Image: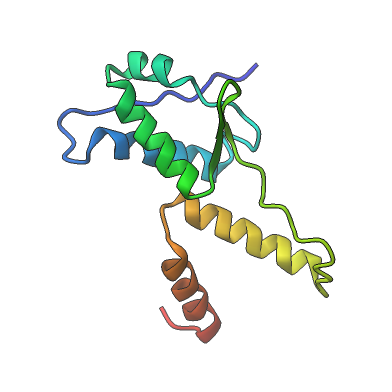
Length: 130
């Protein structure tokens, strides 16, 4: 049995508490310590554990959901999202390349990158520029 990762919020950090929580959870997801399908703590429990308002933790979860990293269902809690489903008849000539791209996008989003930043990084990598 592995121990659950511990989240912390620092009052001396100028980063807002919701962003500290969002960033830590995104890092745990991106690193694989939180895996697809893993359940995040309920809002009230995590808020109590961290000494935060429930709305603060709710905002962090909403931000993670907007990035596609978690899925919240009423009565079902919040879980780390599965990979986005592939459209039927995608007919990709290289499924390994598609999986690698999905993994890159997943990790980039976990790091807080938006679509524009992800595309810029891909273009730099393709062009061989730093």
